Image (cartoon, rainbow, N blue to C red):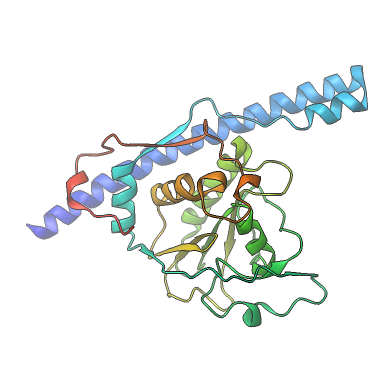
Length: 269
């Protein structure tokens, strides 16, 4: 009976995952359409009105047609079934800024846990990319991003499939293009492989915001959405959180039940 229940639960999770993928694909397509529309308008007006008009329109942010809404019950279930553990991280008081040419190595700066969620860092934050990076990002740069309220998603490529990396990429592209990236390089959603030295917990996914972290055995967009909605920018505890204003019309958490098995899971925090 227990095996049958687990199998049924897995089937329900797969159905939810498929629905979520469809929603993400639709949201990503809408964001890209909006970006193309805005880009076409900008080019036309540049021709007619000149460089000043072009610069003004360059600040327009694409929006998605409808906010992504995730039920709290789905977030809780995703954490439980993905083996997520919220980490106990003590903020490092020193936020010393280093010139990249003279900064100590990452293994010297970050001894509390890797990937880090707090500590000294480069004097400039790293760039906010549209999607998943091919090469591992430098934590001395991304830690400055976290100080501004960013959220970073690190993954072990040996434990995460190509399809799951594509799902992470879709999530990052959709959210950044819809408003989480303010286009000024101050805050956004980052995603990168993490192989050197590897995620300390040995888990597949490490999600970080300033002085906060959660490691998971597998990938699920629902728990990532939940973490971002609770900890990004002005909703989180980062020292310079106001630099990452939360786009309220992009991602929401609903208290409504997200499935028919909401009573058999627990949140890890």
